[in-house]
Length: 346
Image (cartoon, rainbow, N blue to C red):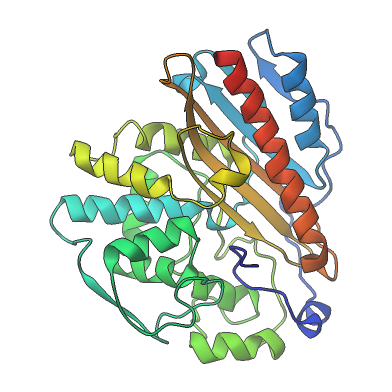
């Protein structure tokens, strides 16, 4: 089974060797106050209450924000939405947006040929990890969102420039969101390499069993993939209105690719238009699941429901063994929440 992780922790020797040094971050202890969810606006149904409790029963530190209607005009449902948590691949929506902005401006084209080789290869790449050759930019962007392919992500990020993606983050007012220069540089760092080091493709493979230094927490102050539920909801509300695109067709393309995420079918009620991106990482000391985006519901099929769900928990010495069950419950809980909201909007 392919999962959208930065590394597949398949070898017991890897997980046994990991000794993650946790930072003094928000996930330092489990979140036990499951009854503190703030549901602004009365009328939350008993079904919604139960669905939210199911999500809050997940292990670790939980956060979510749901806006029913633009800006939460109809209802705002939240639980610690300002927490700074590790969100893994959720940031790739921002790389997609900046790439499409550069296409719109004539700087790039979705037909541009992009090299797939060891200079950009990365683990956690179900589409491109074993391939070599040339791919058009359009399918590279699709692989980045649909399958969260890390090789595709690093190629796209290099083309647009990580600092220009950060400029978009600043333009959107997303003060909490942090992104890496590349997933390979990020993973080089958490495997123990000095900050800014790219171990390269052979080096990454070697470091899985012979790390260059003590392992570090994925949530850190140097290079991470993190943010708050509030900022991811703000991003999708702005982006899906077309705030950052000059042409309508660019927004259409952004939506088309965002709708390809394979996680949508796991977390969204059937027959519901959705644009989303998730992230995940099973890791000793820190594991994560995130899912952010927007569905369109209501009797007229035009009411946006924008959301972000994040959970960080302390992974065991064998996080890969526990991860599938938690992941399944994460998606089931979200689908339950969104199903109730969709029903109530009919």
